[in-house]
Length: 482
Image (cartoon, rainbow, N blue to C red; front, side, top):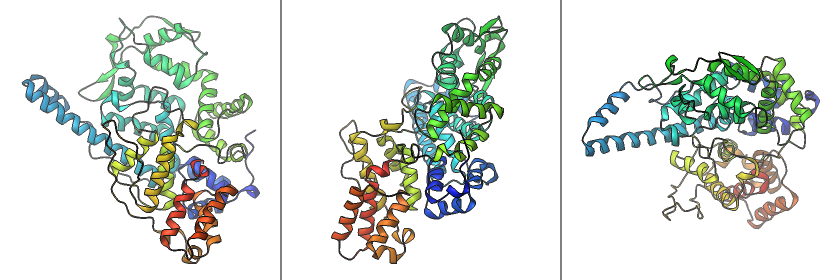
């Protein structure tokens, strides 16, 4: 198990698979570079991303706001009409900042220099699923996003501790309101059930005792920071997962991470995200052994996954349904075009089923086949038309008010960047080039025949024909998989 792939088996298709799963895909030239590096150096170039400079600037507002308390005091003491005006202004600004944050992150995923770091950030966002709808602070959501980026490939205890003390999480699971007189069990429960152990590996008593240990963890609202409040902490003896002591929140997290089940739980979850669903128990044991042997650090585990023969097996390659984010960002990358404008990009992934910064519940997105519904599939085809030809989709889902969102016209894909003119004029070479760029594999015979029939029906091929052929390939079942 986890035997490294040999250099002799390394080729374009396997390098493309690595870039698709450990990132968001890319143009043939990017894949060729990974082929030339060989498997070990290719994987290392993604896993050890800190070696690559990242000069991305943060949103201008992504910092503590010292005037926040003053504005709150002004609103509290203002007459009703003024209070309403201030509240509406605050809410409008927060909505604008949230939209800016969503697009800022999409830009990082699409064009940032560290694809695996952003892919991990997306994974942890779904794992520690926190929604701005309850947090109501773009700054707190940005802070959490940065925690995933900074700690996501590091140590498990370090990441879990940073997330647990994060203001967005403290608000999301009501930990900030927990005190010794009335311990709130929400956060303790989710750490055990969803974040680190899984159902069946703890008792209700463990949850109650852990909630007591976590009392005192709160937020300093004026400073917008985590704060420990000793007077709110229950300093009595607790028994958690068989261990007894005068435990606090940090002790609880150490007890959690020390459980063998924790390594198995998170190793399985990472494999399902990057590899495939339903791994065998024996395989999960192997992953967990690598994780534990390397001090519960993620980089060695990720490296072992991406180098393993299992990762490149037929059961894994092109067997995963693209998430809406993977679909949009990956499409932009293979088409070598800009992201659509902010509102359109954000609406697109929301319509396709993945509203960034607002997962549907504490479990995050289900993923897999749940991404594909009749409406979502039609929307993918419409957005494919938009990305390739710049034409406004004709069958956009209506909003609740019955109106359909207005779609601005966009620039077409520049086909000269994708295919040499000699390839565009040769139908068979064009078909092969379309499959290589968009799929890194061949279409099924019936879908290949359909694209060929379209090209044959056009006579001499021009730019518009190439764009329609791109749209056709993007509308096949094969394109929805990675």
